[in-house]
Amino acid sequence: MKKVQIAGILKSGQVGAEITIKGWVRTRRGSKNVSFIALNDGSTINNLQVVAEVETFGEEFFKNINTGAAIGVTGTLVASAGSGQSVELKAEKIEIIGLSDPDKYPIQPKRHSLEFLREMAHLRPRTATFSAIFRIRHAMIFAIHSFFNERGFFNIHTPIITSSDAEGAGEMFRVSTLSAINPPLNEEGAVDYSQDFFGKAANLTVSGQLEGELFAMALSKIYTFGPTFRAENSNTSRHLAEFWMIEPEVAFFDLNDNMDLAEEFLKYLINYALEHCMDDLLFLSNRLAEEEKVKPADQRSMELIEKLRFVADNDFIRLTYTDAIEILRNSKPNKKGQFQYPVGGYGTDLQSEHERYLVEKEFKKPVILTNYPKEIKAFYMRLDDNGQTVSAMDVLFPQIGEIIGGSQREERLEVLEQRMDEMNIPREDMEWYLDTRRFGGCPHAGFGLGFERLMLFVTGMGNIRDVIPFARTPKNCEF
Ligand code: ATP
Ligand code: MN
Image 1 (cartoon, rainbow, N blue to C red):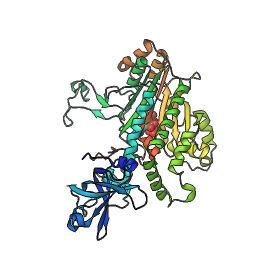
Image 2 (image 1 turned 120 degrees about the vertical axis):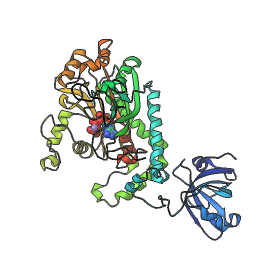
Image 3 (image 1 turned 180 degrees about the vertical axis):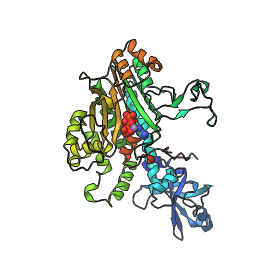
Image 4 (image 1 turned 45 degrees about the horizontal axis):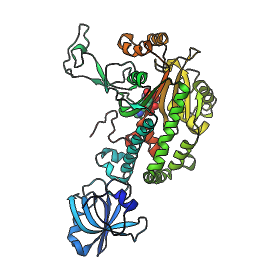
């Protein structure tokens, strides 16, 4: 008999149908005459209830049907007597596929802490919470490709190993096959990378943007979606050493077009989750509500689904850096000295606490901050006419802070060269990049969305380690 998925059965299973399902036992409880097995195959947050007569299988048989065991069940769908589900499966045949020792299986049918489950990252997908998160993760990946495909963008795989360290500034992971103990040295006594695998120093990419720009200068609308690596030693709940980034890049686009695209993109993804992941979102929402109960009322955050709808339905605030600094300087927490980093004058880099103040307290909406001082932004961002600021944009979200960073790019060769010189970026390594400004250069813009930051927002989870299958963070590279 053909195996079917539990998701399909619960949605449209017909009473009387003969089916086979396979999955893992969540719980089993029983009386003298009948055993109830909650079976889950990961296709949905919901379990299918299997009803097995003790008389049919014998009492002994059920000793092996423990939490975590893999079993296959063939039987007939019957109308469910219990509440919640329309059908349950009356078992005729049960196959025990993989045993699970109930005393040793770490994932018990109770609430485990997220910290404990991080140590159990190989088994945590078996929990309701993590299976929900990773189904939503899949839906978001699919929605990202749909969004761009529907709008005529082309997906480009930019390299993972690169030799340009223009952006990294010491935050890159080196890729080398040289001996770590005894590397060849050059005349100056430094490691001689000319003898390395690529004949020069190479690193894992921190962004696909520069290569993405080359393709936007040919295919007009492109996006990358790939792994990104940063060796920044920031042990926060929002940073990973290995994460995934989506980077659209569009020719003939200015900063306003770029902001419109970013806002439309984020709203599309949130709406997609609301349309396609409601069961999982409801589960996560309840979970979150339980957690919030212990907090004082004024510190509780908005209910998850309400929050997603709110962001999807409202315009984002657009504000220049200069105006933001004014607001922050005059804000209550700044005057009362409650910020860890007091907001000084024009030119200070914004910390996450400042970003969150603007979003959560001042505007109570996502904010797009634009036109930052050139000193605190990258060399490739377009210099504004005032000569002081660049056409940068950061999208700031509640609870997350920066979720997107982007800009209109500097398309004027002389200005770009001057900016590179000012910021000590060796031009000779970047001739390929400068070529796009020499031959048919044009205004263009793009941004980077951190995929796991999006996942934090959509799932309401608080720690970025919980929205990626296997987190890589400082001092942590298990599994
Ligand atoms: P932050 O200030 O939060 O470290 P950033 O300014 O370094 O971010 P960008 O270089 O603009 O970020 O990268 C684009 C996007 O990639 C960010 O808006 C964020 O969503 C995401 N991102 C950046 N660094 C990380 C990281 N270490 N882990 C996960 N996501 C990240
Ligand atoms: Mn960073």
